[in-house]
Every structure is written in C-alpha cells, then in structure tokens.
Length: 147
Image (cartoon, rainbow, N blue to C red; front, side, top):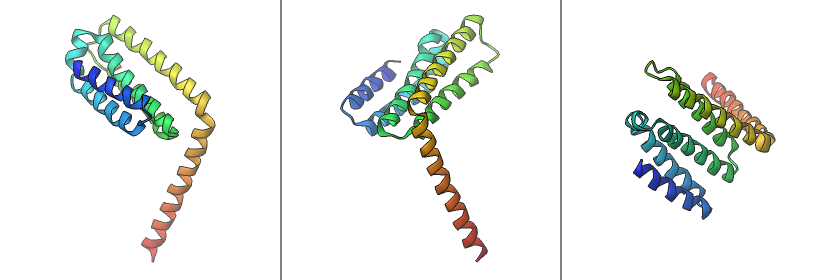
C-alpha cells in the first residue's frame, strides 16, 4: 500500500499542476500496484484494498475529464464496476466483505451518475463523432479490400 500511496500523492500533485497526462500515467501505475498486491491487501484490510483500486479508477477518470476526453473517463467508471463485479464472483467472501463491495458499488454508481449528469451531452457528442470515424474507417477498409 505504501507504494500506491506514494504514486497517488505524485499523481495528485501532477493533477494540481495541470499535468493531466502525467497524472493519468501515475494513477495507472498506482492502480497496477493496487491490483498486484490486491490479494494480500484484501486479506489484511479489505476496505483499504478496495478503496485503493476505486480511488485510482476515479482519479484516472478525473484526469481524462480534465482533458475533455469523456469517453476515456466513462471507461474508467466501467472498469471500476467490472473490478467490483469480479470480486463478487469469489467463493471465499464473507458477509462483511460482500457488504463492503455493495457499498462501494453504490458509491461508484453515484459518482458515475454525477459524471453523466455533468458531462453526458459532451460524452454523447464524442461518442457520435467516434462512431462516425469508425464507420468511415470500416467503409474505407471494405472499399480497399474489394478493389
């Protein structure tokens, strides 16, 4: 956890300095650290282990939002939900751990709803623009293959 805390502090400093790409990279490293030590950390302190991963997902989403990349920010909320979902499939969970996961999922849902309310229109526009680019690329690829 110590390395995660260090990386998160560095990422927060980068974010404060508007170095959002650096903040994303540092938060990804922190998330990777949280995932690598998750089994041990979860067995010792489930709340801190889940919080570390969740905070990292949120911090990455926040940095993408600051960059105006709402699609990537949204993906981080999805990743956080998928992470928690993978935990609920564990056979070794005790009731307190399951309750913690459910509470955390509720918090993620709340944050995701706030994100959607604040940036939903911009997200929809980016998604539409992305789909246009993808469609255009696919059509071009099909034309190249057929000629």
